[in-house]
Length: 239
Image 1 (cartoon, helix red, strand yellow):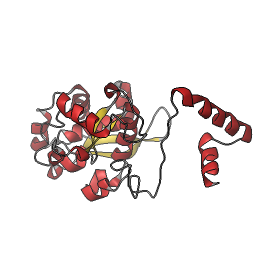
Image 2: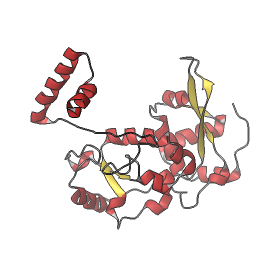
Image 3: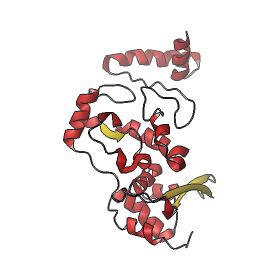
């Protein structure tokens, strides 16, 4: 465990955080100096990158290394620590701001209540507002409610996937170049050149209600042929 004193600039930001999830990691770091992904799991948080993201969104620099071996699995695990206070960015002290219901209503009208990645029409209660460019990259400058195209509507599953991918992307961790984010699938699924800096193309599909039988037939065929549904779908698309 690290016994290094915490920089007073970081302490000043920590004192302003009240959100429960971010507070859990902050308090652990203040007491122990570092916090592993397993420590967060033990506290009941099964998605450590999201917890670290909450702290970063409050303006507090957090770094993650893989320099600890788990006593449970024998594998290397991630360890979070406070980062360099020089990385503190102004305008992020209060973290992510809540969006108003009228603004969400505007986005629902703008996008037609569609989930950005699957393009499925969902009831608005299942959709949440997300910045196209992650808040940890764009900061408070990303709050421009006059420009609905700067935001997207996604469901909880997509939120978890996007959060995990962005948290592990070197651009979000280090470079923070907004133009790189804007050309990523997670910001612009309509037109993108990479997925978290990897040359990847994705197609997200869902079968609903009366369409489910078609998917079940596809899955049964894949099982008979000893391939995954994804492999079979690719083969069929390739002709």
